Amino acid sequence: MPSSTFNSEPRAVPGGPWRATWLAALAFAITVTGALELVSRARGQRPSVVDDPVSWAVVRRTVDDDPGVVAFIGASRMALGYSATAFAAAAPGLRGVQLAIDGASPFGVLEDLANDPRFRGLVVMDMIEWEVGVSDTFNDARLYVQRARALWRAPGALVNRTLAGLAQSELAVLALGGRHVLTSWLGGGRWPAPSWVAADRERISRADYGLAEPAALRRKRDNRLATIPADTPAPQAWLAIIERDVEPLFQRIRGHGGDVAVIHMPLSGRLAEVFDAKYPRGRYWDVFAAQSAAHVMHFRDIPAMAQLTCPDEMHLDQTDQAAFTRALVDAMRERHLLRTP
Image (tube, rainbow, N blue to C red; front, top):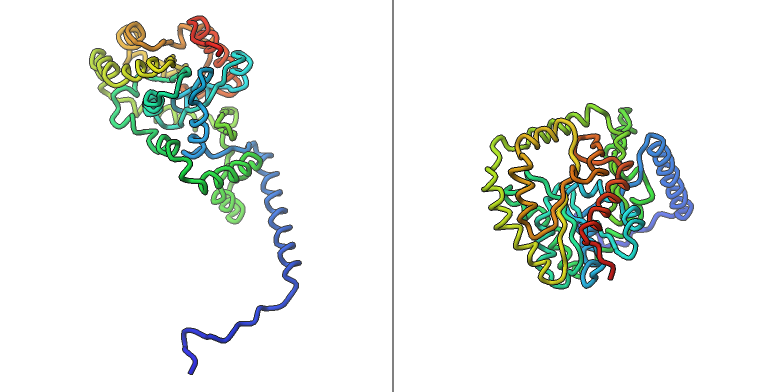
C-alpha cells in the first residue's frame, strides 16, 4: 500500500516550451532592471560599491614590503577627503592606498600596521580629539583586520565580493537597496532619495552634498554635537592616554622602516566652535604635536586646507577632495615625508 507521505512513483516533468519561457523571463528581468536603472540615474543616484571587511582586506594585503606605499587611515573624514587621482598626480612614484573605515577610529588599523614588520611605508592618519580615550576604540576595525589576516581561508567570500562589486560599480539602482525600490514601486510611495556618498571598487568614496537635503545635514550635525561628551578628559589625562596607547605604535612603525603623519582634518561651523571650546589647541593638540614621535599637522596651519568648508561641518564635498589631497601632499613634502623608492 503506497505511503501517504512518500510516493515512489516517478513524476512526469511537465512539457512545454521551457526555453522560450526562460528567455521571456530573462528579457522581462532585463527590461525591468533597465527601467529602474534609468529612473535611478535620472534622480541623481550613482553606482556605489558596498564596502565591507573583504573589500578592505584585499586592499590591506597590498601594502606590505613596499616602501613607496602611503596608507591613508581614519574614519569617514579621511574616506571622503582623500582623492586617489589627485595623489597620483601630486606624488608620482608613490602609491596611495585607502584604508579608512567609515565609523571606525584609526587606532585599530594603526595597531595592525605597527604589528606588521613587513610594513615599511608611510601611514597618514586622520585623528580627532574625541577619539582618544573612548572605550573599545582599538576594536572598531577588528573584523576588518581579522579578515585581512585570513583572507585566503574565504575564497567563496572573495568571489562573492568581486562579483557583487562588478555589478554594484555599474548599476546605480543597486545602491538604493531592493527593499526601498520595491516599496516605492509597488506601494506608490516616494522614490528613494539618492545617496550623496558613492564608492568605487578601490574603496575611494566621493560625497556629493548637492544631493543632500539641508534638513538632513542639520540633523547629522546636531547628532554629532549630542555625542560629544559633556565632560572631556583633562589635558594631562588626554595626553597620557596617547602616550600610553598610541605613541608606542608610532615608534614601532618607525622601528621597522616606516613613518607616521597625523592630520587633524577640516571642521566647520558650529561643530568647529564646540571642538575649539572643549579641546583648546594650546592645551591638547599643540602639546601632542610637540612631543609626538609622529609628524603631527593641523588643518588650520595649512592655508589651502584652512579655507575649505565642510557642508555637514565634518566631511568634505567631492569638489574639495583634490584641493585637500594636494595640500596634504605639499605639507608632507615640506616635512620631507614623501620618499620615492
